[in-house]
Length: 451
Ligand code: FAD
Ligand code: PYC
Image (cartoon, rainbow, N blue to C red; front, side, top):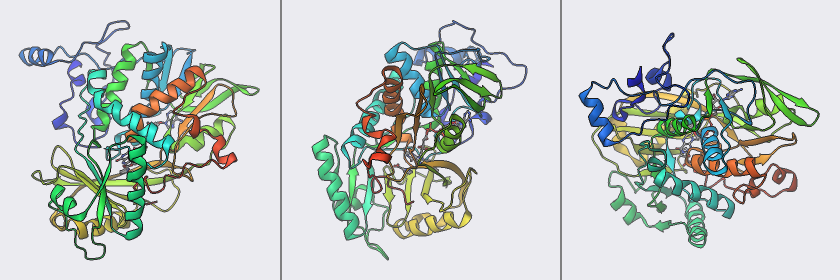
């Protein structure tokens, strides 16, 4: 059993469902018992296990039955929910916490995204939040003692119209004032950085791009697994296959949740369920300015290394990077209808690939290996909501839309502060009130994905 806790990253493909890797075989018990400290991963541990046929690995996180009451209940064991729990324990000493997950942890958008991390946003509150997050990715592997494979390979957002060029020049100036290291580069430098690109047309020649050298990618599942392991080690309960089906209240105050594994009492609750936020809010008795839409991605068969940066081309609605295994990771815009199904329409894949072939003609010969979709939660201003709610004791973290993976550690850091203390400088601007008061944080350009 223990060997399942030692992920061999190179053997795990991007977006492979977690349950195929760590599936809970019936009748098995956890390798770790309550209170046993987790074993540190190290070069020495790998060597030791190699000598004893990997029989000594323990499970990365416990699988407990729910207790009847917790100080804090987090709904949703995606990256943001787990990061919130982690920072509640680490920064605020709150460890009597349950993270409830209706499926398997990381099986939502966290395990379905294309892992792009950057902080080149326009507005000050967003720049602060995304840059905090990007900087936390730099030390995450060490902080969690878990290799999240952060790869600061650089992200380039192409300008292919004069309008887009002006927009990115503006962002570069704003980023300079915010202390974020981006710059606008011309077509010659674009070609030097990414030689496989066709910068000369046919429809939209490349006029330059917004270049963030310290941006990049990380292994998405590993982020969820690393946080889960650290939370479990702090004594928190991560309860999978536990769907929240109702929220109980006493007047205007939360008293607990009904779940498929029984009622759990709490007077503090964080809703962190991405595309399902509207449904949870409805259970709690309030409404959100959110629409849920499918967003999909695909990977090609693996090929030899040919591209060592991430390129996003919003005019033609596509983006591209190469995974460590050699697959070309491809995505486009959202599907144009609301839905809760985790798949997208086929014509969308065709449009995305057709557009990208103009910029990367060499991908025309590749076969698609697999395709998948997630449900993203879109706000009108394309900025997230990190906020108290009309129900006392309930906090909401949602609205990350097409771009929340990059925000995972920073979102957890800030949301934990909000939940623990009632206030966080990083979340102030992102409250629900902004929709009533007209304080929108317009990030439709920085979102970088057509919608
Ligand atoms: P999730 O990971 O979706 O976690 C929410 C969890 O809540 C889920 O596990 C779900 O099962 C659970 N849940 C829902 N309802 C209930 C319930 N009733 N009871 C219990 N649990 C429940 N962002 C980037 O920054 N860069 C990218 O390159 C990028 N690419 C993307 C590509 C695709 C195809 C998709 C779909 C998204 C992409 N994103 C990207 C967006 C990013 O994936 C999300 O913003 C982010 O992962 C959201 O994380 P989360 O933890 O909030 O949500
Ligand atoms: O937010 O950078 C992003 C992104 C890229 C692909 C999907 N979202």
